[in-house]
Image (cartoon, rainbow, N blue to C red; front, side, top):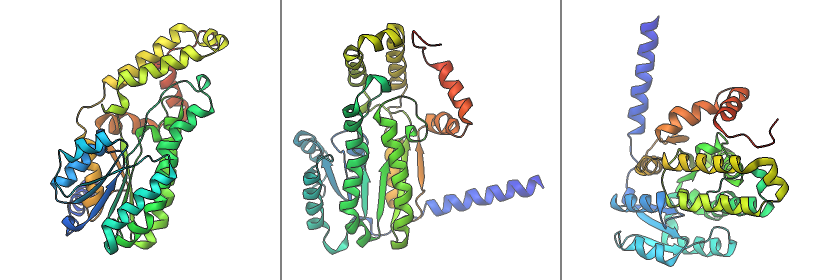
Length: 316
């Protein structure tokens, strides 16, 4: 019986490998629009796909980011300035894309633009949450809805960058909330667009060192929130808890991987494989820690976090 089971698992694995290695034809004729290309995953993916001969349309937040990217790529790659939080910017970028892809449509849309922010919920106000949601979730939705007609015309792909923190919430603030939203939006979008031959994939990276997750960006933000907190909040949580949070965030950032290709290879596969996966977990921490923890009973997951995190000064 066990031999039959092993044989079935082996056959399934071989079949999966065979299916996943089948590549879409005529990649050199296909257009891919990527947001958040100033640095990090978006920048690397743009260069990676450009080297493969695909027609990359890269959206950057700044002129400097666009110029630096163009200096490292071929003349095929085009850039456009895009602020995903502004609908007029999204509409202008959509028109720019339509003019370039024409009747062929847009093969790939990669929603990569995002910001990170970690804190304690009680230290924040509504605007702090809205700032993150506007970029990571609402901006992504706005871009997707505007680009959908072009993607549907090509029967192409939508690749949304979520996070392991869209499966397991580790900190307060808007980041995990936004990524849980990305997961839900992507799931509903995948089912709706399957009727039109469009495939939707979710990328769930673990910890990686990018401009978005640098300690010198995240830690000052937490310090500012602590300094702005009321005397009552500071008394409840205490200086020791604040320092423990800084140490936890810094440790998480410093333990992140430098190899961004672990993520961009997943993105590339989602765009070029005949049979892309629904979800891609990038990084060993995602595969061996965060995702397994997300399947544990809630009381066990909570117990792990209670054990790992610092306690507020006035905790019971």
